[in-house]
Length: 218
Ligand code: Z5A
Image 1 (tube, rainbow, N blue to C red):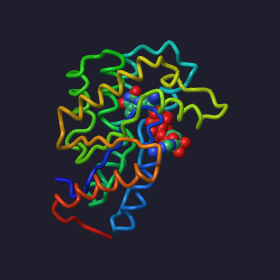
Image 2: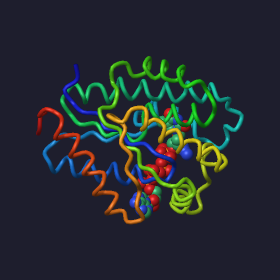
Image 3: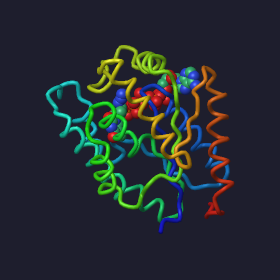
Image 4: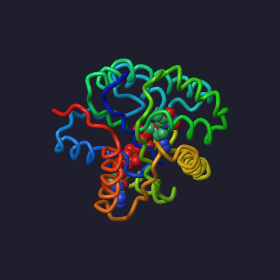
């Protein structure tokens, strides 16, 4: 049984996951927790190579099932190499995207059977499921606009290039997940004011920590 806590951040492109993962890590460290911040796909040497294959604009011919297995490959590596050991050592792991990204992108987005994705997720991560998942919810066009702005001149990757309707299905997928698992999946509305979103994320994490029994601190 793991002694740590796994918190995952999810949302459409440009919803602010990277920004708010960083801020919540700093907040938790200040509170005395040992925190490990990782992101998917990638996060390990092998995972980074898989990420490059997955996102490269040169790999347009990739079929949906190949994409699905590559995300799973990157995931099982990061779980085995980083996440499980950190949880076993009693740390808080904050992960930018995890199992729910595959349900939304490859399930709601690409149309692959959700039940099959969940079976593969279980195979890839075993017992390492999130204790808390924060979905940063923003209207899809706003998120995409922010992501585009951040790219400033860089070419969009293979998945960023997909049509607005694809990204809209992802948002619907996250909202459906939150309805299905309200105990684990919490929606935080992304406000135009970053500070306001930050406060809402902290409140969500604090509530979770209060309900949970005390864990090892630094
Ligand atoms: N993918 C998949 O298909 N299946 C899977 O199983 C997994 C992933 C794990 C990974 O891309 C791609 O892989 C992703 C899903 C797919 N593709 N898409 N689309 P990635 O890792 O390169 O990027 P990302 O995960 O999509 O995130 P991102 O584009 O880096 O965005 P973000 O992290 O959510 O946002 P951000 O960089 O923190 O913020 C964006 C900008 O908005 C930035 O300038 C901020 O200052 C600004 N911002 C943030 N918060 C606010 C608020 N509250 N107000 C205003 N502005 C804000």
